Image 1 (cartoon, one colour):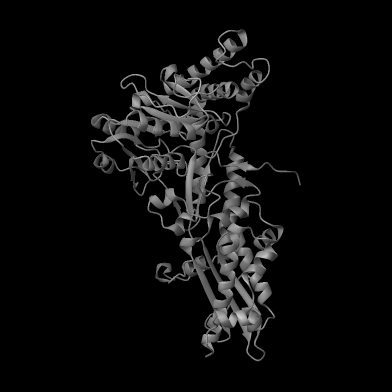
Image 2: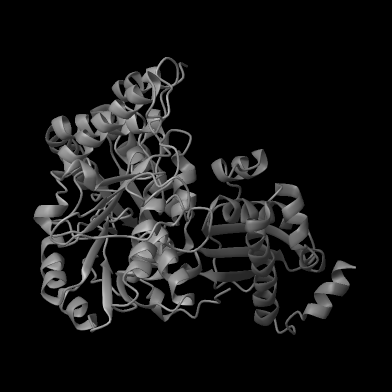
Length: 141
Length: 406
């Protein structure tokens, strides 16, 4: 199976690899997937509490090239977005941007799940209710 | 920068043709193009002579009689012919077949097919080292058992099964013994008669011959085994496999067998040295595990798990330079972890982290050095990226985490 140039680029030069302080109040961490399934993504966001804008994003991923590219791309997209805008990122946007083949769509789903999990972690830490799918959908609309 | 040769360490999926094999084949596409079944003219006689000579070379490699070699299109067909052919031929004796979970799909799926036709099949689990447990095997034998099918050497781990011991059990209980010896023939001595194997499948393209030609050894005496043909037609190959013989392919197969007989031992000696070096150096990396019994293993194969690194991603770091596989080529399109490693008791996480290295006649010392360097760099790169490697290094117990399986 041939990978798209964009997947190869993100795989070879992954953006924003690393960790943020998961104990910090303004950091949200999403850990999704399972080693048994061959994919684990950890995505972290740092939120500017004054503006509600994501000021930094980091990831680490155990998985195939598409999983790494999906999470790398997600961190690029997250920076500078408000939490509501971030919640609206749809996995199909990632599929389209990276030209993922059908067998790799689950990688983009995992990246979307990781984004939502990171947002929810931040919201829970800050006493906000968790995002529901409906809220995410309205943010997306 | 000059174009560097791609390093091929996936010889268990297929081997390149030896140039001497191709040289032997070429005349049989042009001047000597006859049909080996044409009995009335020179072209046919010439082709038949060539087939006879090849059959003799293959028989010599196996130390069996020429007539015990049935040519097929490859090992998949041989496995189908052996298992379906025995099931049909010996239907009056019983309907029970015993095989192992780590067999190739050509055996497993053939058995599954026969289950729909009334066969009862026992799929044995293997031990952690990949070997069939002989007590389990004997316990599975019943009065209705007609066939035991156990591979000589495994394609993913290179583990060699205790063939002689299994054969003794077969003899004791009066059961036919078939072996898929695809990965073993031409690489290590495989002598079915001395070993007690009654039917044996193998193919040319795993031993430096061409694709599209294989054979089934069928014992002619003590016991005289017969299989029901799976294709109807001209009654070629003693009625067991109809179809015009692939003469150029068979000539190549014969040459490959001749070369294997003469060069197997020096190849095996050289490759085991290279393999051991590759394995020892890669295992200097932290958290690695060699899969399969290292004392009963093909000389050119090693299967290594690199913990907390996903195999497909790892391969992507070096697949511009090295060709390896994370399982059998037949399953590498799927996202499932190797069923062979899972049957050996590896967790899915480790099975996802495994790479098979299979060396071959044309692998050089430089290839191995380069592979070691690139794979080491790849593992280190992927571990930098891996959240579970980070957790492992922080001392997090990964088994205690509630993973969200998807």
